[in-house]
Structures are given as C-alpha cells and as structure tokens.
Amino acid sequence: MANKTRIGTDANDFLLETHNNDVIAGLNVMNMFCTLNKSGASTLSVGITTGVLGVLFDLSFAALIFSNSLSDYLSAGIGFVLFSAAAARVMVALMSSFPGMVSDLAAIPTAILAWSTGMVVRELPPTASPESLLVTVIVSIALTSLLTGLFLWILGELKLGNIVRLLPNSVIGGFIASSGLLLVKGAVEILMKQPLDTLSLRDFGQAAMLMHWLPGLLLALYLLVATRRDRHSWVIASSLVGAIALFYGSLWLLGISPAGANDRGLTLGIPALQTTWQLLNWSDLLQINWQAIGSQWMCAGTVSVLTAVLLLMNVKGLEMVMAQDIDFNHELKVAGSANVLLGIGGGILAFHSMGGSILMHRLGGRSRWATVIGAATFILLPLLFSSWLTYFPTSILGGLLLYLGLSCLYEWVCRARKKMMPVDYCIVQLIWVFSGVVGFLQALALGWAIAAGLLLHRTIVIARSSRQKL
Image 1 (cartoon, rainbow, N blue to C red):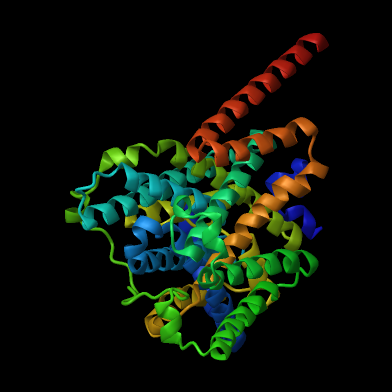
Image 2 (image 1 turned 135 degrees about the horizontal axis):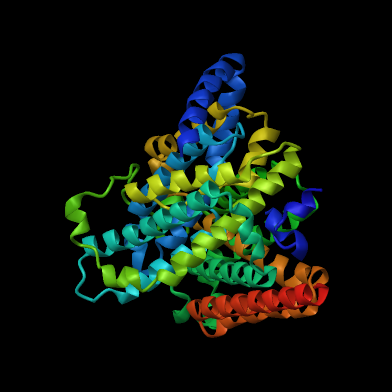
C-alpha cells in the first residue's frame, strides 16, 4: 500500500503524494501539555531526531538557493531557511487536525524557487548593491510564499481542494521531472562549487575534483537504491550518519585535517554563520527591484499549483499509511495560513511533509510537542553548533540534492513508462527534455499550453457525450 503514495508510481493515483483555526489551535495547545506529561523523554528524543534530520535536508536546500552568484549570502540564507522551517513546523503543529503533522520545505517547489532566484539576480543591474540584491531575492521568495498561501487558503475555504485533480497527470509529471533536472544541476554546482555552464567533462576527470563530486554521487546512488529496497524510517538518517563518519574517516586516512578540508572546498566553509533571521524592515523595502521580481510571475503561479497538488498527495498518502481520515480542505487552510504569515514575515514556502510525518509517528512521536521540539532544533542546532556546521561536508549536501533530483527523474522517466499511456508518457518526456535543452521557463509555458489543450479536449469530449445521451 505504501507504494501508492510515491510520486509517479501510478499515473491514475498520482494525486495521492480561518475562524475554525483559532478554536482548533487552542484545543491542540491543551492536548500538547497533556501529552507531554505522559511521555516527555520519548517526545524529546523523537523531536530532536526528526529535527536534526530536517535541518540536514534544509541545509541542502539553502545551499541550492544561495549558490553561484548568491554564495556570499549562504550564511544569511541558512538562517533564513531554518527560521522559516521552524516557524512553519510550529504553526502547522498547532493548527493541523492530525497530531504530529510535520511541515517542511519540499524539493520540487524549492528547486523552482532556486532557479527563479537565479533569474531574478540576472535581471538586476550590475550596479545593484549587495543589500539590494539580497533583499530583492528574499522578497521574491516571500511573495511566492504569500501568493501560494492565499491560493491554498482560498481552495480550502471554498472546499475546492479536489479541483487540482483536473490537471493532467502527464503535465504535472513533466513539471516534476523538470524540477528533478534542476535539482541535479544544482547539486552538481554545489559539489563542484562552479556554475554548470563553466564546467567541461575534463574538469570532472581531474583528480582534485574527484574528491568534490564522487562522494556525493555515490551517496545519491546508494540512497536511491536503499530507499527502494528498504522502506524503514531509519534508512536515510542512518545513511547520513554513516556518510559523515566515512567522510571524516577518509580525511584521517589521507592525512587531511578539517581545516585542510575546508581550504580545499570540501566543507561548507562559512566564516560566520548567521544563526538567526532578522525580519525585513521598511528601509529594506526601498531597495527592492520590483521589475526583476515581476519577471518571475509564471514561476510563482506554477509553484502555487504544484504545492496544492503535492499537498493533496501528501495528505492522501498519509491517510493511507496511518489509516486515519484527514480533512484535506482544512489542511489546505492550515498550510495557506502558515504560508501567508511566512510571506508577510519574509519566509520561504513550507507545507505538510508526508515522509516527515510518517517518520515522526513511526518513531513514536504522536503528539504536537514532538513537532514543536523538532522546530526548536532548527533554531538551537545552528545556534549551539555553528562552528560544526562550518565543517559540514559539502558532498553530503550535494548528494542529498542529487538523490532527490534523481528520484524525480527515475519515477517519471523509468517507472512511469510501465504505468502511463504512451501518449501521456511522451508528454512527460517532452516537457522535461524541453526544459533541459531550451529552458525551464519555456518548458513551463509549454506544459501549461499542453494542460490547457488537454482540458479543452476533455471538455469537448464530455460535451459531445452528453449530447449523444440526450
């Protein structure tokens, strides 16, 4: 049954991966205190464990967004991402009807946001100040969070959540595969610490560069195989712990110190990690380049729709695994409210995580306190261990992103071939190949045009069928 919840395992089942909110949040807070008294130690350990794992994934997302021309702002970006994720976890934990619901950044929307921020930077004039560049990027991300939150909340309020089922699976699959390609490209740039268009095949063969990309590739391939052969909750967590131990064990055998690894670019190498995120103020708003932000309207719309689709998939998949009914329209309003507040506060998009929620429950964290403790980990870990994060292996962050990207491509390029009609499968391949050859923005336009054509064709067929019955 768990297989049905994975992205792309079945084209027909793809969609399986506020006045009432105040009342529910109040009741949930009361339940939290009651639960904490019963099993405090277990709740604490589960919260910390899931929180640390979430931090590792979100570090990779921060590295994806703040790379290349934004690499100088990685320290601020880490604080921005971790603070947003912590805030989202607390808000969703309080408002969700499902105890232990975990919210986090998602790979597909984040990949699109990373590409979009890169385009925003290109739109800025060369004379733009560093402050203007960073504020413009943050506001472009925050506006996407705000617009997505409003879209989700309206869908939930009008009880129109299932309307996303009307979108053709082939187009959604094409978008996901295209996002997977973005993740792969971003992972390579993180591993190599160079823009992809400046690299040649000869660069990958250099002995010095093998230490950068080969460990990340091996980790990604291992996770890709391991997560399909063994679906136990600890697979990824134990693999990451083993990868960190293997990385530093290899450095010891090679006689390379942590400082030496940092000098070689094998670790994050952040001189001063920003452990907290400062909200934007009015003076910051005067430095925003609105023209650069406005050029990315199609990406913002695509992120909003894909988020609704992925949220539906996650909630429905969680229902199946947990054997418990969850009100999807209510969860839409929960995610919508959280992202509206994140957008207003200058945060990045986050919503319900099926994998994180299942892991939380399988480890025994069936209370909202476990999620809140996990959220606290996002703040306390970089605050207490900022120097350790400076020496965190870049190969693991890049390997995680590479694993996520390859997973998307594997599902929609390999597995989808056996599950989809030939025409639908060809549409998926057309969109993501078009994205790689021509451009991601052009692939979005192509995908939406195909979606409009398929919906129009479906409407005509239904209308003709109705006339024939009459």
